[in-house]
Amino acid sequence: MLNKKTVEDISVKGKKVLVRCDFNVPLKEGVITDENRLTAALPTINKLIDEGAKVILCSHLGKPKGEAKPELSLAPVAKRLNELLKKEVVFAADDTVVGENAKKAVESMQDGDVVLLENTRYRKEETKNGEAFSKELASLCDVFVNDAFGTAHRSHCSNVGVTQYVDTCAVGYLMEKEINFLGNAVNNPERPFVAILGGAKVSDKINVINNLLEKVDTLIIGGGMAYTFLKAKGDRIGKSLLEADKVDYAGDMIKKAEDKGVKLLLPIDNVVAREFKNDTPFKTVSHDGIDPDWQGLDIGAETQTLFADAVKDAKTVVWNGPMGVFEFENFANGTKAVAKALAATDATTIIGGGDSAAAVNQLGFGDKMSHISTGGGASLEFLEGKELPGVAAANNK
Ligand code: AMP
Image (cartoon, rainbow, N blue to C red; front, top):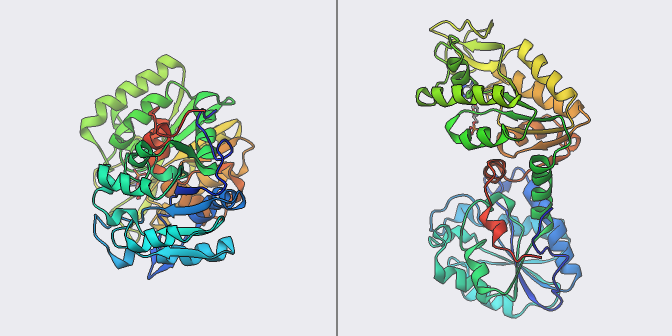
């Protein structure tokens, strides 16, 4: 369990509380296309409003790289939060984030009021954890609450730097929930514990694989990264994605799994394509037989069954990364099958953000999962066994 102070442990009445949220939502022409991150932030915001705090919200959005890019303004988020909270959210439109508008807006706040600051990444110091901007943010508040799990693996001004200049620093409900779900899964899982990893690169997940092999009963590897493992086993993988410099590592991990008695499941058949696109000839072949001119873009039907069976009897499942190039309809079946298997199992199911979360939500299985993380990168670093700086910076209980 999390040993950090949460919003339950602090007194906020009449105080100015700066809340770092993760409002990094997808926008299309100024319209928010997925508001999961907004709704996930509401419990903490509502709690602080109800307690009579002056609630100052901040977040980054996209990568403006230190420039005030209008298309990455948080203005649309303020508008939508107004509706979701059923309460006025004053938007402090300031290119410098903590400028005259922000200061004025905060000065005139009453208990229970809500102000949203502009995109913290309008300031170039933000991602460098610079002292000046951290102090400016801290000058606005008496208490700091970090509820942005999606950036918890980064040390930035608005989630880590600011805590050096504020005495009371706690985490919000979302952060607490994320850490508890992932923490329980990794450190105290109900067994069998199955982890499913997919996506493009072995190199991105090296430490995750290594750490999970210490914890899980079964490790399933699909997606593009599986081919480096199949290569290490001596299979013919044709033109499939290969990280040649990671073949030895993959071999070591196969050996480690054997030594630890962990079941390592790799694809036993693949959907192979002529070219990397949707409209191209494709067929299913067994794993040892990808011809030189073909590339594996999805797991085959037998592999779908193999993976689904492993999930059926599990008590805890963590999933990160698609099983194939799910952006192409013809190669999305493996990812869909895994999402379906997770929706059907009685296990505690945890989706580690990013593409897998999008796949689960698109298929309408969102409410069938125990927990869908709001942070892909952060959940991966957590699964690596790393301490997240955004969490570490909060006061201990
Ligand atoms: P990651 O960011 O590492 O989780 O990778 C996600 C990406 O992996 C998605 O864009 C998928 O299209 C891609 N991917 C999954 N399977 C394959 C594959 N067999 N070949 C190439 N790319 C893949």
